Image (tube, rainbow, N blue to C red; front, side, top):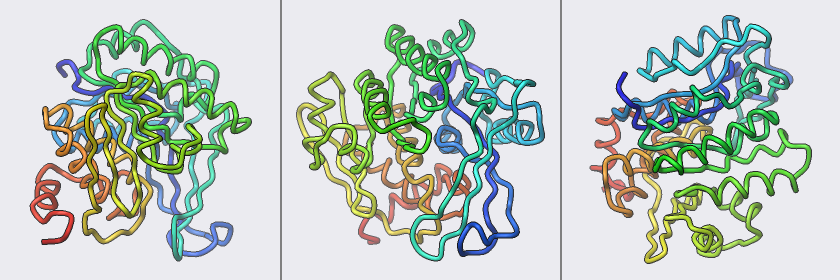
Length: 317
């Protein structure tokens, strides 16, 4: 594989999804899939035709084998996904909701993914990319993964590699909210493009309005801030202008992965050299399509599926 367009890093987990709707504690049968915010972004970008590389660790177990096989099947370079024989691949167990978002629980403490650590090889790989995508999840997993997050972003910046950052706040992974806000907030200020949800933005900045959230990062050097508004679409702010994108008409099955699809669409548009308004439009379109399937990344669209939705437009016309 030639130099990647995008590198991302994080934990790939086994994902066991209940086959029937209802309380998770009553579920008896599960389907095995894969989960991980960064995996979702990587799959989406690969399906849109970009060269993608992934950095991480999995256990020397069947779930780890499945994760590496999935990367190969999607055309993602997993050369820097190491097999850690001293730990197991983490697990997410996910319910199927009658209404609203499903409940999920993690079994990932001490997992192989949490043992991600900086190395010259991995950081050198980051420096070869056109773009690095980071999230706020790896810094919550361990001290070494947090160090990798900091060094990967700094390596990218030193090499002139663009950096996007999705906070992807996971309060249950942190010892307390103050530490989460401090660490994730610091990493966000190191990125060129910050992609928070509206609630995440309020948690991290203490500000409630999208413009105010964006101003927090723009004043610290960000090139742009895209604030996700859920069913209301999204807004993009740069130092000179702002845009609002209404939602696209899709049949929603599961909203998990929508934010990751948004990030992938935004990065894809950056790589393709599109303008700011078109970046926001593509981000919202990919995020919408990601909700059409129960798997976290199974609904990520191909380029032709994306083009078809963009042709319809947000009003369904």
